[in-house]
Image 1: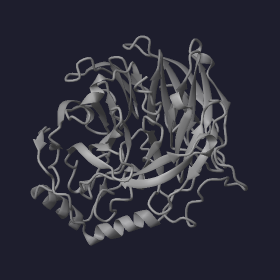
Image 2 (image 1 turned 30 degrees about the horizontal axis):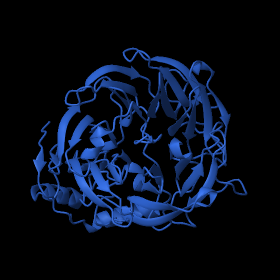
Image 3 (image 1 turned 135 degrees about the vertical axis):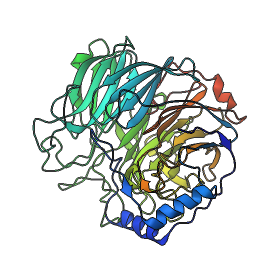
Image 4 (image 1 turned 90 degrees about the horizontal axis):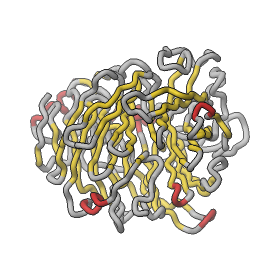
Length: 500
């Protein structure tokens, strides 16, 4: 594998063949968008592209419009320090969490713990085989939490895939004791309605509350019945995690009829996902606030009572948002960045056909006070570098870079790479740094790229679906003050008060 650190200005515009326009138009109009493809125990099947698309991708590489296969290109203020390829766990890499000198990396086949005390040379501490996509991951104290959103034969780490129509199938949350990082121990499992695609921690001194996001109910699924307009809330006693249990299912979208509330999706709103639950939730405990990215809706709600969250405002974007995927507050809690995962993370949407407003971030100001606060749309942000039609690319997981008085974020864009951008002016966001690899293939659309890119204690860490764990260093006067901020623990969906 060739690893090149090339500082050059990429040409922004990449031509798109007419066949690509037809393909993506079909993608957008055929039905609701879906979330990240769930390959279960097998990798996603590569998708052939047309001869003209493949020829265009090869020409773009030759002309310097995009990096070559396995070539790394960065802005001048980004340095690629390390890459740790996959090892024991062959599945798709997913989310990241941090604690002290450790990074915890999810994988569809389990999770891996890295010692990052030397960011230039991370070392594997342990790898746990426990299949159950997506294995969305977070940590709190001595506990590690893992989401299972594929139908399994049981709740063990030896389970196999099983039809969702089987009543005996299991999906939900797994809890591990990580007091010994070299030997994590599986201590609890809690089944939840429709499984757990993602989850969010609301930690307290004695207990950890877990907000479980799941969706897509079906009358044929015994444990995932419609309507499914809420989230499961799990209470985990720190000293007795084996007693973890569901303590509620607060409804976030009230509505009449069997389909419940929320966005109806198509055909009422063509190309927009119907809301049947939430994809991801970010909480800001210091402000008793949460923001939910819920398929066809974005919501703002209060978590003063963590077992009974209360919706404050609800917004939709039926023009440019297909699937509300994730959310991030700024530090002052007067803005929320929502992401649109157009095409479910498996499509090429960073091109001229799709344009700058779809598959992008939506920046919303929070105006007003208390229960009268409203989400007010300000602008979209999308990476300014077009990708090839063989590269899956769309807005995905990111975190704040903590700089007082500024709103700066680092974000993953799958094969679009990693982008650092400033949204201090909500109406005029701008990129200030980037890192990306060339396409995995110029002939076939193969899923890959950065799933999560997070800033933690002076460095950017990225989990690439295919290539493994990356460490980046940004050196820029606009982000340098963040190096002084040190955290003991970071789960990005549980946003800290960086300056407390």
